[in-house]
Length: 156
Image (cartoon, rainbow, N blue to C red; front, side, top):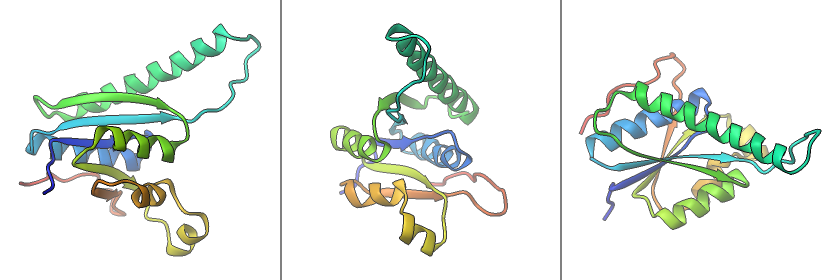
C-alpha cells in the first residue's frame, strides 16, 4: 500500500522544478505529508585564487543561496502548516537523488520533467529518466504546461 507520509522533491531552481515543487507542496498539504526538498550541488572543482578555506567559503555561500531560494519558494507556496525539511546534497545529481530516496523511503518522489522529444531523450537521456529506473518508490512527473499556466490546485 502506498503511503504519502513523506514526499521528496528535488529542485534545481528551473521553472520546471518550481512547478514540480508547487505540486509537491499542494500534495503534502492535502495529505499532511512531510515534504523534503532536496537540492544537489554537483561536485566540481572550484576555481579560486586561494586554496582551502576560500573554496569552503564559496561552497557555503552557494549552499546558503540555495537554502534562501528554497525558503522563498516555501513562503510563496502559502500552505499554512506545511511540514518542510530541506536537504542540500553534494555529488552527482542522479546518484544523490537515488541514494537519498533509498535512505528516506518516501511514499512518492515528485520531479519535474522537461518533456523533451523522444529522439532527444533516446539519444541523450535525462536525469529524470535515469532516476525513475533506479528508485523503488512511485514517481510523479510534473511537466511545465505549454500554455504558461504553472499550477492548479490539487484536489483530494
